[in-house]
Length: 412
Image 1: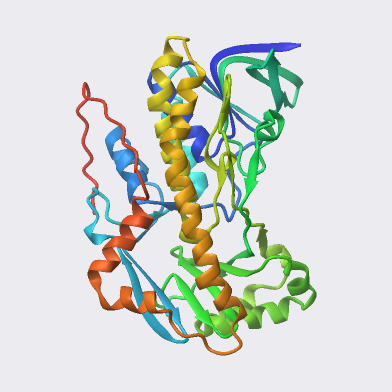
Image 2 (image 1 turned 60 degrees about the vertical axis):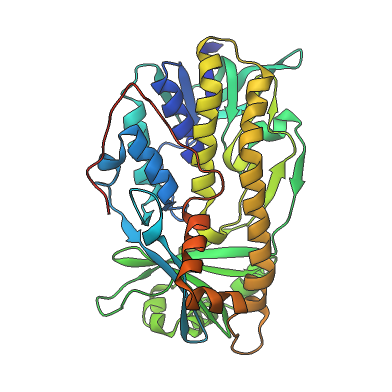
């Protein structure tokens, strides 16, 4: 039996897991991150990097190199409803260095985090390695049992962090109670080719045929079609031609682009979950990111919340973990710090489901803009408020290292 020992083992090589691993390694803590895949090349993952996340990278001295990776900038957000465009958010007034949302393929973002983390000799990433269950010693979690291409692997650790997403195996093994808030939608994701003649568009388009998210990714459109939960098989049964007509009916400008959809293999299903743990921790175990609070894709804030969790975890747990004196109260501090912004964001998403998405999906005729959308469009100051909610979130985290003086030259 192969055995490893470390101060912290993290299950999940996504934004929450890798950011936590990097920040702990930066403090001199031995960290092993387990990633079940060989690489990060999986499409239709969250690609939004919010101003608050970019600000953290600036504070860490990592922003300049991060922004050399391919990305697009979203400085304003708008929505088109029945042919009328409404401005809803303006990131230009945010108190951050980068006053925009960066759209960056998640594999580029994660590859950069790994590159930065591997500069520390105490950081180790094990690819093709999956945490299977927890090592429980008289109620104290003491690491994980894992599997890789060579078989069984035992990793003992002072702290185990479950950052393995909304279907977290470690969370399920922990016995912690998960409350399902529920989501009335699922989403189909797809890529559509972009022609040079197609102009930039609003982020959301609403018509009598439904709702479409349309993100400009440079040479292609990344599109999301929400629909009522449980209707995926019904939509598929109607055929790909009917699906093309549905998309074109919402966004007529895509009538030519949708011709590229010839198979359902090009359309990926995201089953939307909104849930949260009552307690994020046990002795020796902490859940963060989607493992602690699965978010709806509304607002694209999932990565932002995951990064904020990671920063809070590394800041609050790092010192005691470094001294090998980690206690349950340190883990409880993370939940105390991050549970409120996560739950309030989920509550806002539930409201958006009920009053924005579902009316758009069930409308029998061309929908009208809700009053609050009209107010946002008419009063620029209100768009700054929505930009703060989307771009910074509630209780944004920061990383401060007074001993170091770092600066970034790439700004707006």
